[in-house]
Image (spheres, protein in one colour):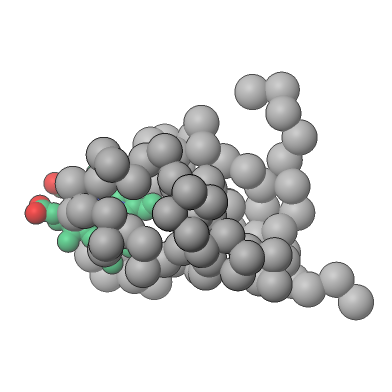
Length: 85
Ligand code: HEM
């Protein structure tokens, strides 16, 4: 889309850990997963385990064959960064 992509440090990601405001990072990209929650084949509870944090490892452990990059493209909010100095 034409929206601004954000630079998201872990401290910001951490704030978005609620059902109605859930963000996660996968392979360096940050997604708002709130609208996807009801559609996740593995259930909301499992998906919420990565809310507010980097979900790359857990995602890869459960289904490395799933293309999150493609699936969540419209949910992308920005890029995971290190903490600003
Ligand atoms: C299944 C997407 C995160 C646990 C699936 C499937 C998709 C998907 C497409 C179906 C895969 C298939 O049938 O081959 C996603 C996306 C995620 C995500 C886009 C990240 C935003 C997670 C996380 C967990 C998880 C973090 C666990 C902590 C599962 C499980 C299944 C599943 C257990 C199997 C459900 C079943 O077949 O009964 N997910 N997933 N997922 N996912 Fe996720």
